[in-house]
Length: 121
Image (cartoon, rainbow, N blue to C red; front, side, top):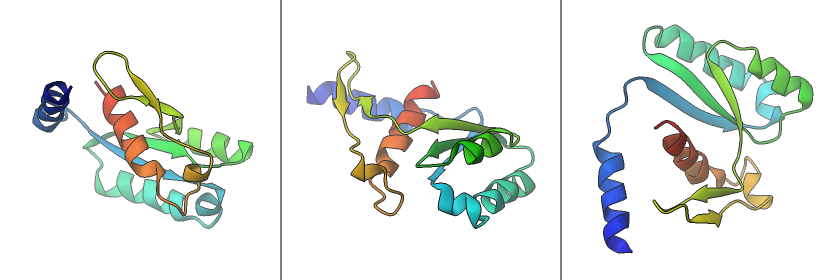
């Protein structure tokens, strides 16, 4: 129903966050070359008083990489969801295929942002 969709969009646009949460995602390559570590360090340096947590979506970390990232201050690791709730009535849709999880394809972005918004309520 489009009226429910419009209301949901208005509700999301009117919400003001109590705290800043940053959403990011990457695979092992970006951990190995230091880019993820640099991002997280920069966030902590520049936003010392405003970031509650960094939501990190795993696009293919090794077990050791996942353990390392989970040990970092303020970082919460999440798996990329295979489906998301797209309606207020519990309607779900499969939205992510294995191909879409590839970091270079960027198809995961709307899914992880939607997931982060839904779980932050």
